[in-house]
Amino acid sequence: MQALSSFIAGSWQTGKGEGTSLFNPATEEPIARASSDGLDLAGALDFARDRGGPALRALSFAERGKLLGEMARRIHEHRDALIELSMKNGGNTRSDAKFDVDGAMGTLAHYAELGAELGAARILADGEAVQLGRSPRLAGRHVLVPRPGVALLVNAFNFPAWGLGEKAACALLAGVPVVVKPATSTAWVAHKIVEIVADALPAGALSLVCGSAHELPGLLGPGDAIAFTGSSDTALRLRALPRVQTAAVRLNVEADSLNSAIVGADVEPGSDTYELFVADVVREVRQKTGQKCTAVRRIFAPEALVERVRDDLADRLRAVTPGDPFAEGVHMGPLASAQQKRDVSAGMARLGEHARMVCGGEPAPIGVPAGKGYFVAATLLEATDPGAAVLHELEVFGPVATLIAAPDDPAELCALVARGGGGLVCSAYSDDRKTAAALVAGLAPHHGRIVLGSQKIAGQAVGPGTVLPQLIHGGPGRAGGGEELGGPRGLAFYSQRTALQGDRALLDAIVK
Ligand code: NAP
Image 1 (cartoon, rainbow, N blue to C red):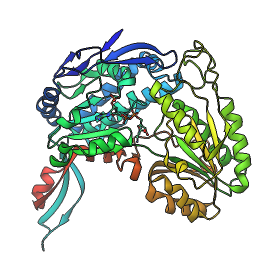
Image 2: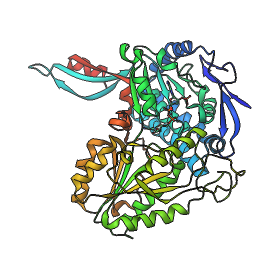
Image 3: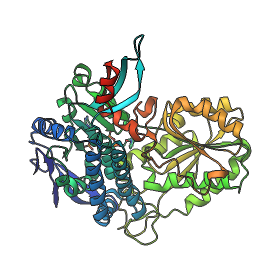
Image 4: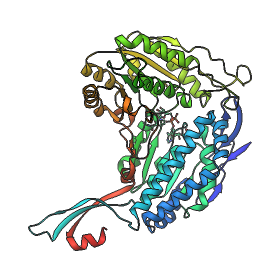
């Protein structure tokens, strides 16, 4: 069985003992194992800080961008192998695997281009100079410079490629070395990516720790940062770490979210906008077996549309065939792990206390040995008690969404949606500008991103579940309060913002 080693202090090193097993979630066969026991993790962080940091800081944005471009190129070169591994270790269908791998490549390529645009500079200007005295000579200016430490990138199990790519792109372009810690259950894809790209980067710029290594965040110090994606429970543990509090280790959290899709009362069934809404919801339930932080969990439809929406969604979700991603005709793979299967089943049972099942039930996966695999059917629930707390507070991280009858009054609707406690993304479908504006006003304070679906963009819309490098990813409240990506905004977390004040001509010479 493949033992996943770690790439630390410039070499591949294998942890002691058996470690944790990784499985093929369609067949339940063990396929690899990973251990970080006995590895010198403190030494790994020092190597990144002492070797990777100076090497990256010596480069201009354009030069760092070239490194990202080379990472993207190599991932493209090994795309087929990565997709296959993602199908085997993550239970992804081929198209779901592409979503992850191509997402990593596209994000790295986007930041490579940004590096080229920023050119020979090593300091990033943050806004224009401002006059501070009576004459224009005395001026002030904000700049962003690379922080001196290391960035620990802790990722969730669902996007081992994209999670690595999107975090590393921002940190490396900002000039900060990274230590990647993928979720153990699906770490093989991240392991392969590091194997592919490691020698394209300066020593210490990119390290990888496979295996649980939960002690890593506690080893960080001043100047270091943690970019975390995962559950609220783990986020809470990280926030409580003494080093995070006393050494001011920066922490960015991307956590749970009960994302919503809202169809407006003005939307006619069968119209382009309606079809966009239905297609988006079905994709969000099915894609990656619902294991996306941005997947739709709650669907709000006005009373008059509920029946039609329920029937249309159920028809399409019943046609989603689960099975082994390698088998013909499979639309949806298994959940990624046995734990996921337990959590999703328990979550559905809890939602079921306040919602009835419209479609779902016992799955009939194809291409797998009888009784094997962590499968669930694509499931639509309909709320019997729209105000029940559990429907708005419990994130079931699988192919499950609940249809909820929406109040007519936009303010009441927004208040109900806001009971999610802060989310990553909300999509609202309407061709009425007043409705769209009222929803934006009511929903924006509670979400990191709002997708406005309408007839004008129906043919070219990017669904709410796709995180784009140009726009920020993150959300307030239970979504973690974090912010990633967003073009150049993504560099800020890894940078120190410093105010310079002095002679205007001198500032202009330093900050180009
Ligand atoms: P998780 O159990 O919190 O694990 C996330 C990562 O944290 C894994 O790499 C895990 O490593 C590590 N970890 C766990 N306990 C730790 C500790 N005490 N100290 C340091 N690291 C620790 O979450 P998950 O089950 O992988 O992911 C599912 C959750 O992530 C869902 O709730 C979902 O909403 C959320 N998510 C959010 C986003 C977003 O962008 N907002 C994206 C994807 C997923 P091991 O695997 O080795 O334990």
